[in-house]
Length: 208
Image (tube, rainbow, N blue to C red; front, side, top):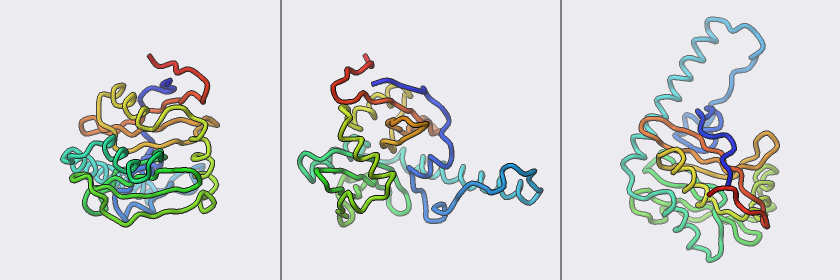
């Protein structure tokens, strides 16, 4: 598995697409009119939004550092609910008690489970759906997963070693026309993103 970009500060929009901190942040988006000179009000709004996001990140990290179940164990628990399933994506959430939201796939079915980050128990009713119910982007990523040799858990282990931290979210995403495993790593009081290019089935990994 090849690390395509190394470590970088994760863009805010990507970060909150993977980690759902609270219902208040769900509607956060980019400011319109980026080609225009911002007014004082717009600058103040952008600063306030940045402060809210930074505070949310701090809350996520405070909760995450006290949890007892690592992300790899949460994936194994979710995959164990359906023998032969694979994890498509996982994210750490603190909208209530800290949990991992895990989506696994098997055949033409997608299963979403919520795993308590302290006990490892399934804390909510499973949501099952067919691939036909997914939006186009999700469907493309999950179909691509079928042609990838590595598991998300493999990418997590490589990313944690590279960033010297603990993963709290990950999934397969398309960026700049390429499919990569994107893993969010907590290192101290910061979040970092590691992107890994997975070899296709039949190719040998370049990671040693």
